[in-house]
Structures are given as structure tokens and as C-alpha cells.
Length: 309
Image 1 (cartoon, rainbow, N blue to C red):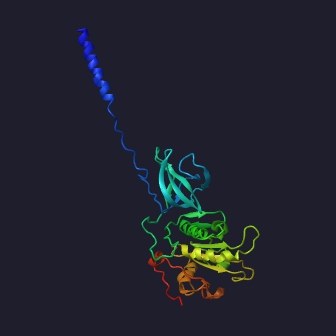
Image 2: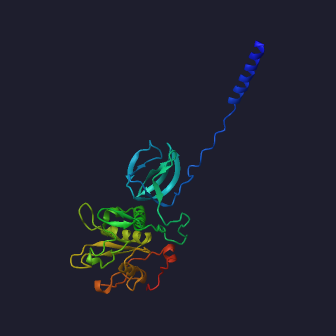
Image 3: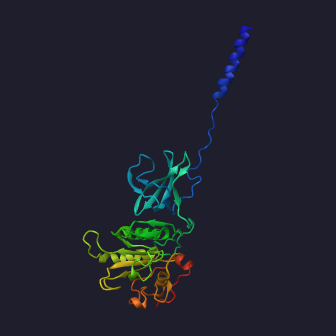
């Protein structure tokens, strides 16, 4: 009887060991891009109240090469890569390329989001000039401290920077920003163009010795126009005695433009009429002396070369 019991125990043990020796089929890990709203080609922003590290490679051991402030925007270039429990994207932040984390996969906590009003499938047509890119329709504000822009305008400004930098330009547009938008009545010489959104003024002077960067003016204007601005040089004394030399630019198609800014786009003295955007009371209109750029997204908004001689 005792021998029989030993045989039963031995048989049960054999069955148990055979069972646990069977291979365990683990559930496949979800795809790295599962559940994300991000994709290469989109603009995105830091939605957290803390800055995001920018690293040379995806992962916590990647060298830290900078950071992206809370609320600031960038372009997604590649990814995602899932490393160290985080989902990483390669991004271009003001012409600095690196990797930043969208968030923690393990805790499903994410702090990067796409900008509103953009379509990853909306790409430039083959007939578009290089650098044309439809802007996001996102009108949340970003405050530099000395100037405020909506995110649509900031995206256009960064796109202009990318075009200009690719051509070897040395000016950093964000640092050259001397007047932004939404400052109603603060600068009389702007005759209301900066009262709403979409308006920027950029310095064309060196930050080192304050000399005028004449060789940079035309490349800056071309980059701004390709990105989606009606942009002109305002020379010294042009607006009033002692008025400083600078570039004045208005974002084409911005929904928050003041009426004065809209007139500079397609009014009687506007960009799409072939003029320099100055009304008669301010020395205009005068013919525009810089080549116009028209992208497909501008034509879709109804802007054409009508009126241009």
C-alpha cells in the first residue's frame, strides 16, 4: 500500500513538472506607436508644466543637449522609439535636432501633444516651392516675455527659421523678435497691424555690435515669405523720423488678424496686390520689390496673384 502511494505521488509530481515545463506564450508587447496622436511631420508642444529634456539619442542614457520649455513647440521628424519605459520622438526644436520623450508607457502618463488644426496627410504639392508647409490652426498663445504670438504664428516663424538656416543664415528669428501680436494701441507707427494676431517685427541688426546685417535681409525675407508671411523691410526713417530698420511680417490666413493687418495681405495696398503693405497715410502704396511666394495652401484659402502687375 505504501509502495502504491509512492507511485501515485511520483506520477502526480511527473505531471506537475511536465506542466510547468511547457513553454509560456507571453502576450506580444503593444506597438510602440499604439495610442499616440503624434506622427512625423506634425508640430507638437510640451503640455506639461515642466521643460522636456532634449537628448542626442532615445533613452535616459542619451546625452542631454538641451531642453524644450513648457508650452513651446517643435516639429516631429522621426520615431517613435520605446526605450527605458518611455516613448521617444526625434524632433527639430528651433533648428536643434534631438530626441524627447512623449511620456511614460508604463504609467500611461504623457506630456507631449500635437498642435490643433493640422493634418499629417496634408503635404506640399510637387509644384510648391521648397519649404512650403501648411501651418497648424492653433491660436493658443505663447509669451516670450517681451512679445506674444499665437502658436500658428510661432510655427510659421520656426518654419521660416528652418528654411533660412538651411541656406546658411546666421540670424536666430526668435532672438530677433522685437514686436509680436495682440498689443493693441501700444505702437502708433504700426497703425493697428499688431493689434491682433499674426504680426511680427524682426530686428536686422547684429546682436554683437548693432550693425545692420544687410547681407541677411533678402534671405530672411525670402524665408519668411516661403513659410507663409507677407514680409517687407521697413528701412530707417521710413515710417517716421528716426524709425528703426526692421522686417515687418504678417501671417497669411491668420484668423486673428486686425483689420489693418488684413489690408496688408489682400487690400488695395497689400501683398497679393503687389504692393508693400503701407497705406497712403504712411507713405504707400509702393510696388513690392521682392519676389512673392504662393504655396498651395495659400491658394486653397483663396489667395492668388490677382492684381499683381
